[in-house]
Structure formats: structure tokens, C-alpha cells
Length: 248
Ligand SMILES: Nc1ncnc2c1ncn2[C@@H]1O[C@H](COP(=O)(O)OP(=O)(O)OP(=O)(O)O)[C@@H](O)[C@H]1O
Image 1 (cartoon, helix red, strand yellow):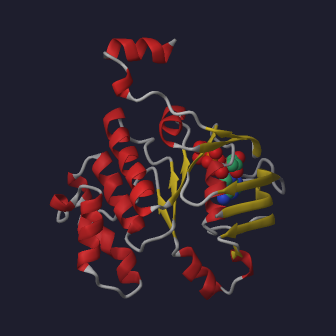
Image 2: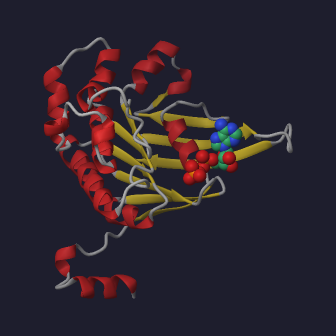
């Protein structure tokens, strides 16, 4: 479970025009994300979505308030214990962040190697999970955006984290690849029982996949809603019927 209690995050403003000023990226956030749910975070650009993820991952500490992951306040841990705790959280980014000079296999193996683990089987198992086993020895430049993101998901999950944070994972992809990546994330939740936090400005993606979603507006949490999934494609007899009903 992830809990944010009265969390505030402020940054010194960038640039010289407002020297000494502060940007209030998050203000007074109270939020609980349950185990094994797919939780959406939506909001306009600058509303604080990425800041929220960085706090959950403890890449940054809150200015005030507490962030608890499975009941543990990472701010109170020693740096070493915090690093160990952070390994239980995987992360996926909009621009994939794969190393261009390494194959898909080596990219996925990297988090294990950083822990001095060499587990070829485990790497292949994760590549298989994202349907990329047959591309294991290709470099990212030969892969489509959707394929790169699937490799990035395998890399994030190879150390078996209980939580996966996704920052705009489909925003650089076309509709077809978006669907492919969201199918994989659905499978991650169902089969690996990973808790997924999905930051996205694409309301359709959140509607089709999340159980609940938080709406951020200029750093404030304005709502947490249960998401009602749209009817599945099979519910319509034709594309025309689906388009008509979806748009109306
Ligand atoms: N390191 C930083 N230093 C200064 N200001 C920052 C920093 N990171 C974020 N901000 C500011 O905090 C606010 C929230 O930014 P954040 O990136 O969390 O929003 P976002 O909703 O993820 O936006 P986007 O969708 O454009 O990435 C913005 O005004 C941003 O300029």
C-alpha cells in the first residue's frame, strides 16, 4: 500500500526572473493507493503528476508530510535501507530510457547485474512475458516504440518489485502500440499482482485500464474517482457503431 499524508512539495523556481520564489508542485495531498490496483493519475501539464511519482519512488523527499510504502516512511531510513526499499519499486518512462549500445537482453539484465546477479533464465523469462524473447539480441534502434516500451517494462520488473510506477508510458506511441503496452500492463497486474501507478494525460488510456484515478490540478488533488471502463470492443457489432456510441 502507498500512503501520502498531507504531502507538500515545493521547488525553488527556475530561471532568474522570479529569483527566491517557490513553485508549489504539490499541496496538501492525502492519498491511499491499494495493493494490486491499477491507479491512474491525471492532470494537465505542470499539475504535479511526475513530482508525485518521484516522491513515491523517493527520488525526492517531500517538503512536508509523509510518504509511506507498505507502512515504511522511507525518509526515516538509513541511505542503505532506503536503497534496498527502493528496489521494490520499478519505473517505466515515456522515452523508454533504454541504453542504445546494449541489446534488449542486456538492458533487461542490467538491474540484476547492479545487484551482482547473473540470472539468464530470469531475463529470458521476463522478455518472454512481454513477448520479446525472439528480439532479445537486438539493439533498441531496431525496435519500434511499442517494442522498446515492452523491453523497458521487462527491465523494470526483472527484480520482481511489488510496485510499478509508469510515467506517461504510452504518450510517445501510436494507438496500436498503446494498446499493446496497456495489454502487457494489464497482464502484469493480473499475473504478477503488481500494484501499478499510471501517470497519463491520455484520459482514454486511464479509462480503459485503471480501477481508480486521482485528478490533480495545480498541485492539488481535486478528486479520486472509481473509473468506469468503457464497453469492450466485442460489445459493438461494427467499428461504425462503436465510433458513433463512443463519440456521442
Ligand atoms: N526540479 C524542479 N525544479 C523546479 N521546479 C520544478 C522541478 N520539477 C518540477 N517543477 C515544477 O513543478 C510543477 C509540477 O511539475 P511536474 O513535472 O510534477 O508536473 P506534471 O504534471 O508531471 O507536468 P508534465 O506533464 O508537463 O510533465 C511545475 O510547475 C514544474 O515546473
